[in-house]
Amino acid sequence: MPDTGGGNKRYQRVSTNLLFKDWGKLFHNSAAATAIEDPLVHKRVLVRITGKSRRINQEQELDAA
Image (tube, rainbow, N blue to C red; front, side, top):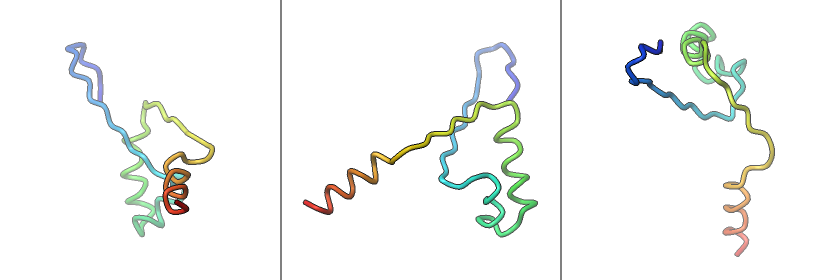
């Protein structure tokens, strides 16, 4: 969204464990995946988090208890 200077910024957060190149499999159509992906990444900040998931580790600990 363009910044109009009025302080009405909109934020979108999308979380996924799929790479963008695999979105075509999710939506069963590469063109649809690209149409969804393009506005999400255009002039945006992408943050890639790597490493082990704390949530999965906590679930495993609960299951073992």
